[in-house]
Amino acid sequence: MLLVIGLVLGIAIGWLLRGKPQTVATAPVEKEVQGVVVSTVQSDLLKPEWYAALGGKTNVRLAELIASTRIRVELINGALLNENALKNSGIAGFAKIDSHIVHLIV
Image (tube, rainbow, N blue to C red):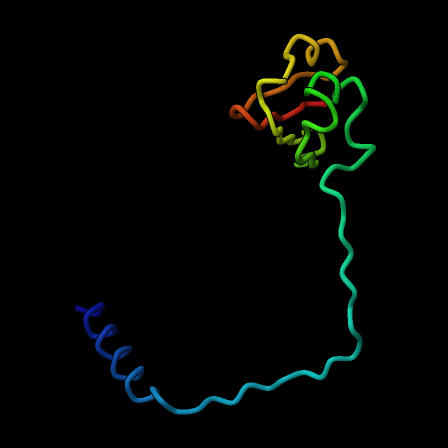
């Protein structure tokens, strides 16, 4: 019952306030900020032997640190992933999320 009363009151208040212009304060711009484009693959994030196991540097579309011990890697061609080489490359482990995404546990 209270829910229905609240709903009716909300609709009534909405209809009363409808159409009234609202003023929005604007803040002055003090200084323009220049954007910086950052590469999606940090050169120090993946070791050369990891790149080789992932199908080469050109096969890595994205590499990002998602936790202190996990790197998310998005591959262009998931078929080039060499799981045996990845196991022997010195990482603690890896999780294959789908055919193009691998999480490296470092």
